[in-house]
Image (cartoon, rainbow, N blue to C red; front, top):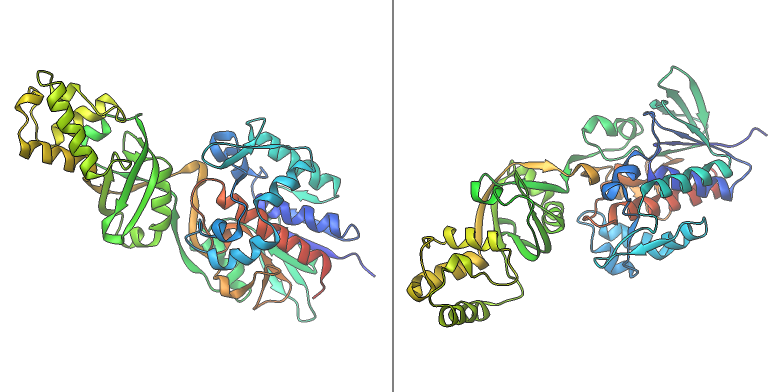
Length: 411
């Protein structure tokens, strides 16, 4: 009997997890990973500013699944089988310890993505996985008697009993054509996790300032998020904006990325508290300029610009601030409105929504419901999470499920 051959197209997080799990569970099988580029695990390398945000410290499957704008229903059951606690244990068993930061993100204690790359590469080689870089899968055909005929980028043709597609997000619809050629459809891909362009000079002049927390909202879509905000030379970024972009990804694409953004700079204070704060400053600092007396939670430069944006002239003293002007300043603090025009992709965590529709996949095994022997993992599926390690966790989970299934079942 010839050796079973299992081929995984895509040398990223999901592909490596699947290959290692499969090869460790089925040492008699030949497991091959094909990567069209020269570098395996490229996205792992750049994630988290080069530190690799491996996962998120959320260990309840229901709560974890709620962080996925697309895929939460399918992933909830998958997380019952393999979730962040399992990811932490999996890496720990291979000598890599993870740490949890205050916001829940988990990184290797070494603070370098190379640790994760080395771990995955070492585990793959120990399990005798064949790693083929500069070797993409160009075409695949399902054979009548089972298995696949595969044509590689160098012109070589090989055969496999099972095939997994883990080729990453469909930045363009063409990236999903292998799945389409094997009978699948694609949900049109659009970007997720991006920053907002806001052509307001005073805001851009504050580039580099970070405020935490703020509340950001897209009133037209009834979406809001709370968290850290970073002011940039092109507009706004930071975790709160990236999460908002994920939830609004498809709608914002349809709006051609022109939309209204509202910011509450002091979300911990209600209207009454802000009004009281303004009145206390008026009483205690009557002779001081309004622009020079910020709320302590706000950077002084941002406070100055908010005061001016409220229509209060720079020379105004607290004693001279009218009731109407105080009301206008309070509105500016709680409801600064901007017109966003365009977006910039977050290169460290480039994510797309769209891909292979989830009803076409069995999430117990990650096997196609349309093409026996074909499995999926990672961002090729119509799954995406908010920023914070969630997209990698979906990759580890779907890769683990696919790897287990490919090691134990026959077509």
